[in-house]
Amino acid sequence: MPMTRIMLTLLAGWAGQGGSIKTTTGVIGKHLGRCRRQVFRYLKDAVEEGYITYTRTKDKMGYYTGIRIWLNYAAIRFTTSRKAKNTSKNAETSDVTLKSDSNDKYIFTVKEDPELSTLLGRFGSLIENETEYIHV
Image (cartoon, rainbow, N blue to C red; front, top):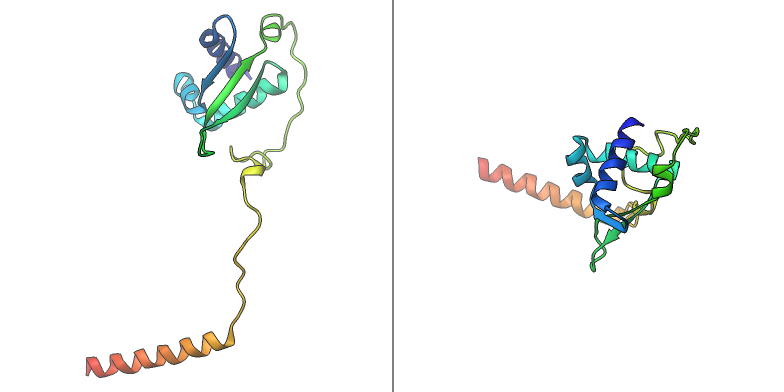
């Protein structure tokens, strides 16, 4: 994507002579004038092309705080032609949340309890009778 090149130029300017860049997708998006979802697409495109590698950073509590990006300067500087990339399905990457971050197991299952339903029914009828006496 054309904006991927612009993002790589921005990141190369931030990195200087080398090392890694610790930032967030929101900060990159603010400098590019794009949303964080679009920046995620640019990062994914750059990884597929081999220009960068990145990991998510966590704090001591385990919360994700940002990303750390390493640039592949040889690939960025000496690119002569663009190779066809593998396209992914849009439904698989509908948001930034990765598959490992979502919980597919439901802990709470609803089982019908006949005793509880009869008790709640009797309690409901008692309340209806009480309100009739109050309003009269």
